[in-house]
Every structure is written in C-alpha cells, then in structure tokens.
Image (tube, rainbow, N blue to C red; front, side, top):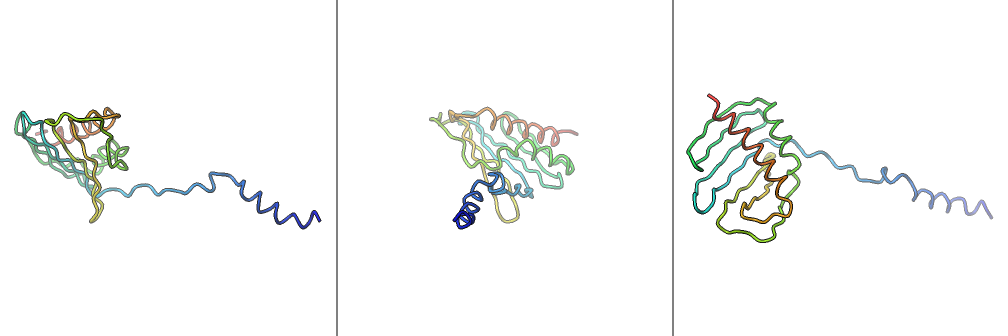
Length: 153
C-alpha cells in the first residue's frame, strides 16, 4: 500500500520545489536606439526644452526657457550609457501618480525609442507627485549632462 502512495507523494513534493526555479525570468530591457525629452516651461515664462541622444552618443539640445541656447554634441557610446544609466529606473514607468495639479506649470515627455516602437513617461511639473523627487531628479541630472555636452565649445 505504501508503494501505491509513492507517485502521489512525488507529485506533492514537486509542488514544493525551490520558488526561485518557478519565478519567471524577465528579459532585460532592450537597449534603446534613442532617448529623448521634450517639455514646455510654465504658463508664465513659456518656452520649451528638447534634447535627444542616440546609441552612438550623438545628439542635440535646445532650449528657449529663460534664454535661447542649444547645440549638437557627440558624447560617444559611453555618454549614451551614462544617460541611460541615469534614466533606466524610469524606463518601465508609464505614469507618475499625481494628487492634484497647478495648471500653469510645464509639461514634458521622456521617450525611449526601440526600432519603430516608442515608450514615454509624461511629466506634469504642476503635479503634486506622490514620489516626485527621484523621477524629477533623474530627468534633471540627464538634462543637465546633455546641456553641458551641447553647450561646451
């Protein structure tokens, strides 16, 4: 009789296998062909800022907020990797939760292009974000670096 229960015990014990073995393995996000940002200033000052960088490290920056400035740059593949590393924690986000907003502040979108597909993360700078600091800080850090490269003569 005990031998008749052996197959049943084997099936039950198989269900207790290491949970890590059953965890689906997620593929790392494909490297984007291009990362870009476009945004507007607030309703009082207007203007806009936009920049892009491709996988080779070539890109451009332009702003008309406060002062008009811009330029092209070639930061090399290492430059692209720096920008990607800064923004990578935001790549899988599609929304920044908002608890009300001031309507005359700027808006923008951070974009990752892979082939024909593009994903975006929208920023509403008048929004009372629940977790604003990390996303805004990362966008600011990437934008400052791109600006530095573009305005270096």
